Image 1 (cartoon, rainbow, N blue to C red):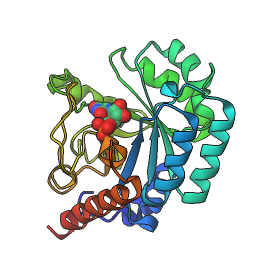
Image 2: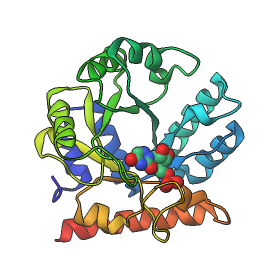
Image 3: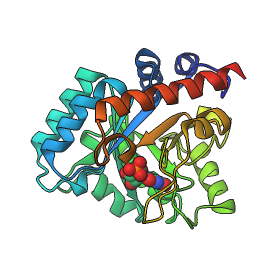
Length: 258
Ligand code: UP6
């Protein structure tokens, strides 16, 4: 699949959400996802409107928004339609199946009602996927497994990562992984990669950055996730989003040309 275009992969994919994602990527020539880690509703919506034209996926941490309300979600959904992007709530569920069902479908955030994509750790075993699937599958949502992490000293390695791959292959609700590379050729499971930066090498709290070329061209990942590289202190988010979109897309074209 690393040698196929996003358009070709979308045409033959069996999951409607992934079909939609690949089509969006091709239309916008973007494999960029923005990690919108801002703390107010106004900042989040402002960023989505500014950077929306350049991203295929807008990634949220809705529990860091101090003035969250259901109107935020309605407005974000309207921006997703306006700018043609999918919404990924980076919730990183990690509890037993019954509890994650409640957390995903209910509470204040009602994540399953508006987030096209969410993700989970498989530390509790396969029941977490089944619990999330009961809520998300009827709504046409998709799940990513955290097969690896970008941070220094992370424990998702070796046999644990391999278990993620086995569980992903076996569960229809899973559309792919968070991790640093392509993990399998089964079912065209996608990889989205955080910890991407063109300049910085990391932060003071263990984050580690690699370039789009390392991630997409060399490692075969599908989507780069960029946060502070785009809206960090002193940056112009529009200019940076354009720069990262171009870097990610060029890395993909380079992979196809190999
Ligand atoms: N994220 C990582 N590493 C992972 C998984 N998720 O950084 O292994 C998420 C963070 C943040 C974003 O929660 O939202 O990706 C990275 O942001 P940054 O580009 O500003 O470092």
